[in-house]
View 1 (cartoon, one colour):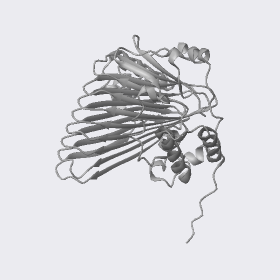
View 2: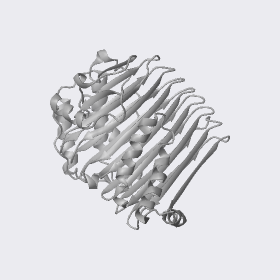
View 3: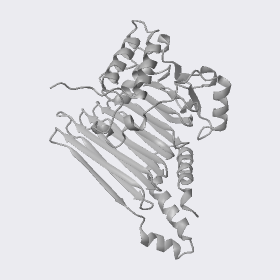
View 4: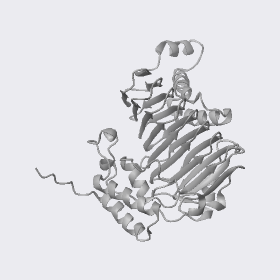
Length: 429
């Protein structure tokens, strides 16, 4: 039987044309060869659709029938204006600026012990870029790996200290493929906040590679605040956690538009730890997809996954979590929980947890809950003079903000909590 491949969509044709233009300058350098290979594999399957299991509930082929034009280099003054209008979540934070996918050294700074440079500059230490995504078959990963504009590489020494905000500055009505590679030294401690600024009616597809080596401690917070109903924010993180290392990861998703934040984590070192939290407010024209795949391939490694989703006014939250325990990964402790709160009868939540365990001495589990606000708690607050709308909003805030409990900087925790409160303000009070 002959299988006839479907005709490419307008969006897929636009991506192929973009690759033709960009690949004209490729050389035989390893990174360029990897870019060509990645896009060839992407083009073979095209944009993911509902028959691709991992994208069953976020059909990008149907949603992205056409694409905005690829972003040109953003003037420094324009990028600075967006940065000034969106200050860092806390003071004393260094910023690494990527505008329309390109590293902007004039607007970037880093703490002592941290080196930053363009991902396309071999002198910036890029020889390991692509190591974590080389074997990936994820369509968003492949699209970015073949089409990224420039990107940034960050090296963190073992004596580094401080917080770094990676500011993804995006113009309006454009297609952007930002790429980030972060190499952390063994034993180092570093805190990152990743944000997308601007991007009205834009399509942003970000790819991050994060190396967490032996005894390192990395906190990574991604804040996705959709600014318009026709904006699309796609983000993929590939990470490797080695011996006695610890990763604390948080995704906060609010606002409007389509958001998909996916993480592929490989815990490969004995006693490695990877903890994931997600706080989602999908109220109104918001489709928020959190997808997480964790592979355990080490002794006595641990992971925890907690998703908190509040939906209403037609909003949708997707939670997909998969834990994979390899045959030799004895003493693994991996637990996943998804909690959903319905603010009214029009929201939708999809929970899809999976476990694949090939070791026999593990403690693994998953669970999911969904429901409305506790009417007894609403009555308790109303009996003490709190208006009903305010009572419901306060309870919803407390439910979602609980996902921030592992954020180490109290100022950042409060700044994120304030964004969640603002997203729930439509509940009144």
